[in-house]
Length: 342
Image (tube, rainbow, N blue to C red; front, side, top):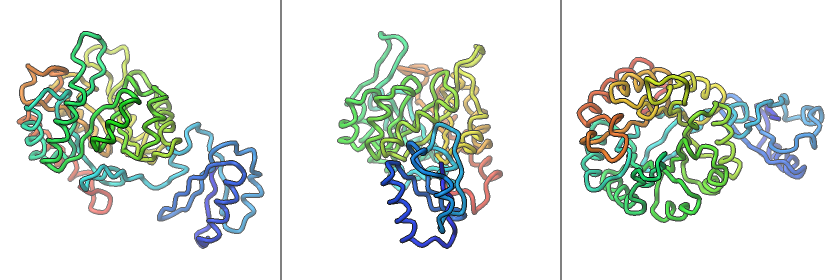
């Protein structure tokens, strides 16, 4: 249930209403936008008579929300959420960012790659220190040493880190190492204990869609995080598993506008994992940009043929230079000065 308030509602009256609702045992989600001020009611809304609520002087109207996700719902929060990722980098609400770097941290070549992607225009550095792999015998990542290498490169270049957390026991490690953006990978998209644990922090969470997850399941995963108090969630479309075998996954570009319609959270697209092949990454990156994604996550490696994981989908730094130039061209076409920012 949501209550849309009158434009002339005083701060004192709003505070009184919020207190009244919370005393009924419900949570409130207060969102003041340019055009509407909304109070979202989360919990057992049968405790409140909607007709009584609508009769209050400061309430314009009351509307029921049928979707099971509440805090992630645009009806609760009409304005786009802007997530601050640190180092002056924001995403959402017209702020567009590119996350780039190797699939996995391999060693000292990380700084070389990081310098190139930064020079090309990437604003966040990705790299896996922990790698969830289908085979237990495949490379699993460098662990804490990989986090240290990411921290070293990001500090030199003044860029936020984006790296995957796989286990709730690593939350304190990520906090201690000041990891700016915590990625929840496709395999953990419904690891509910992990989602709840990262929800107890204020760290920005890049939440990837599950390998065969629906859009609603992605939004409900975001709801798990937000229900614990962390509203800094970034949604990521990374392709889903279908009957098609010519690409690694099927890149569901429908998800970008659909998520923007349903949710206020920023939406990032990952054409690398979606397609699985270098030759398809650039065209799908451009398509995702044109579809209105708030950012892209692209894998870049200085020598893909020798990459320890996912080299088949990595761009070389020279390829990334060209892709970034074309992304800028697409952005110049679809953006105006009022709706888009760097």
